Length: 398
Image 1: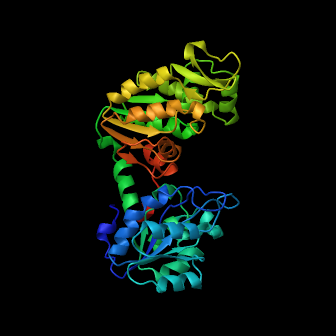
Image 2 (image 1 turned 90 degrees about the vertical axis):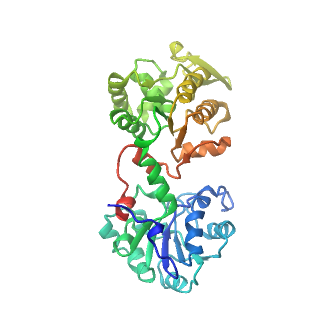
Image 3 (image 1 turned 30 degrees about the vertical axis):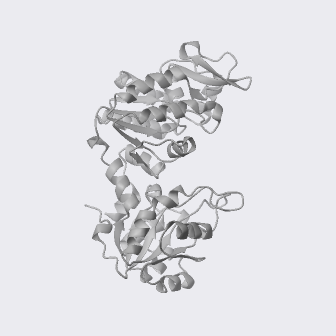
């Protein structure tokens, strides 16, 4: 069943609940440290307001008990700066105050309701019909005429604000959601040959991405980096050293070595392993050939080396499509940023480049890189689509 978009919504003087994902890094004083996620939703919100909608914005910030579990007043102020339309703030989510705030909206104005996760049921996951019975959905939906989900980054969750409203209201995908589904849901239609560069520390998810891409003919080549590369090197019989081995075992990834071994047996010609790696020795970056492993001083592997970057760059330069998911090393430390910067920069030489969200997008922002055709707003949600799984919030829109 097709998903309706803003093209199908008559927005004029319509009260529209819009779920966005503006969960952002915060400074020590509670101010926004990065407004990238707010900027992503500007097109959706501006279009609705320009068309005369009365917009009630729903969002979350942080996790209960976390340092960034905070009010959304700074987000409302920033949205007001980014949009050419007024954005009020209401410190309630579904109470009478919140409903009154929505009722009081004029055409072409918006209110950002308080952090949905201040309400305990919002941090739980439900089937859609049960989510529709929660206080948030059942109390707020009577003052809304329609619902728009633009929160792709949270679409892999089945929390009330994501799956409950479509049970009660006509529902639509916002422009962020629409674009993400169009791009990530149609990788099989992108230019070939396709190369996946897969790294990071979320090994089970990453191995599943590789498995799905190779078994379904979505990738001709896979370049492994990060902890994922360590797992594949171990599967290939390389002694990666005690420190890196303990890291893998402490996280329960022993079975991922077995999965990696099976993939190497089935698709070894398509999976490219690092030829050198970087460790820290006496406070300096030291690069070692894989043939020289394990490190003599038991240093953990923290990045790929320059020879690996060059080899991977050659593959990417001949690629029709490059899909990036996960950094090549501990990119937050400038000592070990070279691998991620080098691989990601090389990916822009492909004809078409797709970037997964999460740490991958964060690394691109850190390095100030450009030239990518699509940078996803979602980490976990993008991973789900890249592994062929469905997203609860998307299924609710169907």
